[in-house]
Image 1 (cartoon, rainbow, N blue to C red):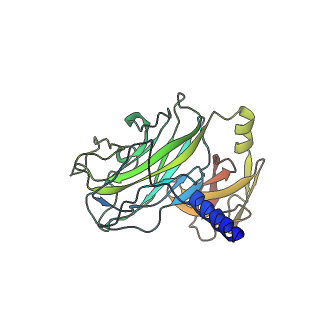
Image 2: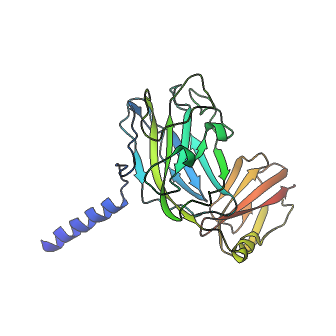
Image 3: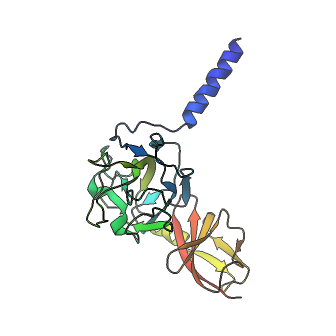
Length: 276
C-alpha cells in the first residue's frame, strides 16, 4: 500500500513539474473577452516552441507561461534572431502583435523592451480572414545595459485601432477596449559578448561542395546541431534537424543563405549556391 501511494505521489510530482504555469505572477496578467491561440510557433536561437492548433472565438483563456521550454542563449554581441509564425485568424480585429524581453529583470514589460512589433518588422498587420500567413523574422542587438541570466519574455497578439496605424504601441497587460488576443510568456537567457576566440571558432565552418547540386556537407570547429536555409530575401525555405547531410536537390537554382546553430543556441551564416 505504501509503495502504491509513493508511486502515485511521484507521478503527480513529475506531471506538475512538466505542466505549464497559467499564472503570470509576478508579471501583470493579460486576458481578453475572446482569448484563443493565434500563433503557430516561435523560434529563438534555433529552438522552436509550438503553441498548437489555431483556436476560435469563444475559447477559454489561453495564457500560458512556458517555464519548461529551454531556448538557445541570446548574447550581447552580434545579431540575435527571433521568428514568429502567426495564424490567419477568422476575426479581422487582432492585427497587432509585440514581443517584450524584460532586459532589466524588474518584473515589468516596458515599451523600451519591445523587441518585435508590427512597425519594426516586414509586416504592417497580422493576417486575418484568409490572408496569407508567413514567418516574421527580426534580427536585433541586446542593449549593453541588459542584465545577464534568465529573464522573462512575452509574446502577445491583440486588436487595436482600426484602420491599422504604425504609431500604436501595445500594452503588455490588458488594455482598454481590447477584446481578442492571446498571450504567452517564456524564459530566455542573456549572456555577455562572446570572446574573440569563441567568435572565430563559430565563424570557422566550411561547406562543400559550393556550388551544390544534391547535398551539402558542413564541417565546423565547434559542434553544429541544426541548420536552416533562407532565400536572399530572408524567407525560411528549409530546416534541417541535423547537419550530417543537407539535401538541396529540391531547391531551385540560385543563391541562398545557410544558417547553422551551435549547442549554446548561437548561430553563424554563409552564402551557398545551388546549381544543377
